[in-house]
Length: 286
Image (cartoon, rainbow, N blue to C red; front, side, top):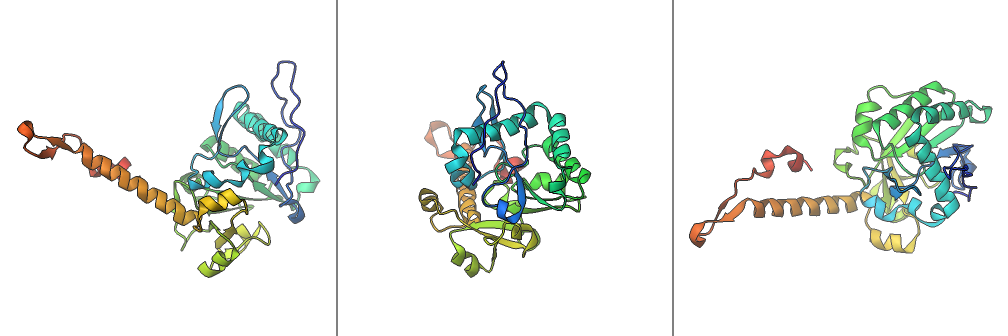
């Protein structure tokens, strides 16, 4: 969890100044010598009324996200994270220059940077900006968890920088695209015993094990009582699969209802004129 930070100082117009520091260290990562870049978690609203979603592929994880709990909700912490995001959204080239410049400091040579201890690669333009930053600082090592599988398949996997490692995390709307026999994947488990029983490997000793340890990464769930109650002994992967199956069945029932209509004179039913789900690949694949 991050320490409280001083919020950006407003200008005379009320708009926040750009953050003076982009990279910080939280209590979990600081002992490892890891620095982190943080955005607000999932969906929210800026003070000026604009809305955002930094985790567009979030699924069940949004319901039990550690970054929507505790110190992340403190006003001064939320203000800092929102200022980071506003910098990206309002001036992406300026943010890219500032991040590249900050990473040139000697303290980051040989260091690890975790991109997003909250938030994700929410757009192509933002992801490509990070790629340019990573390539510009080969003396720095970067890693990330992400649920943006399709985006990474297209933009990262064909030509990944040597100094960037990542792990795909379960609990998102693109889970079905993951292959644990091939991909490096992370799943949240109820506890350490469940990780061991599944034959996965815990990253509890060091967050860097998510990208440096064995390929099947187990993360013990945060011990937040109401989050554990919602998890109900499941993993994120199994919980998301349940939700996906329920939604698929709901769509199938709706499709069946939509494809039947009463015949004149009450003589039963006949197919409606709308196309079947099989004729609509966008829904059939959902």
